[in-house]
Image 1 (cartoon, rainbow, N blue to C red):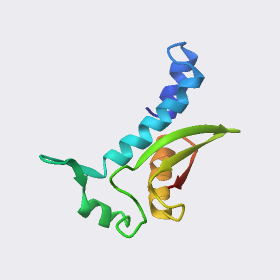
Image 2: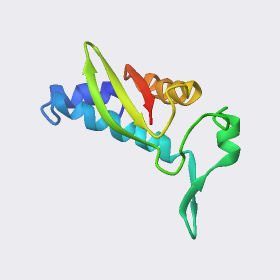
Image 3: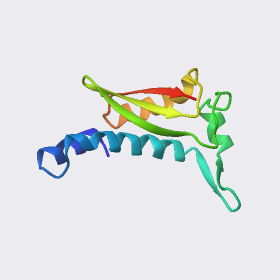
Length: 113
């Protein structure tokens, strides 16, 4: 959900401000899932072509369990914590932050093991 849509829903009483954490977490996890393709045996596998195209192929990431597990409000912005990637996974952080900005959310992504 784009931030402007969320803000409108809050104004109309259809959502609560506190729902933003779950929306941000869901959006980031959706972006992470979009880096995979369905697999008959393993359910999902990393889309290696996409990972290379995005410059994520050399990132220190455990692709088997990558996920956003927590979101915190920090002033007027948000911090999203992504588990199973090294703190130096800059390209992954930038990929996620860029899309969140496109959708109107001011989110800093922190990666950790």
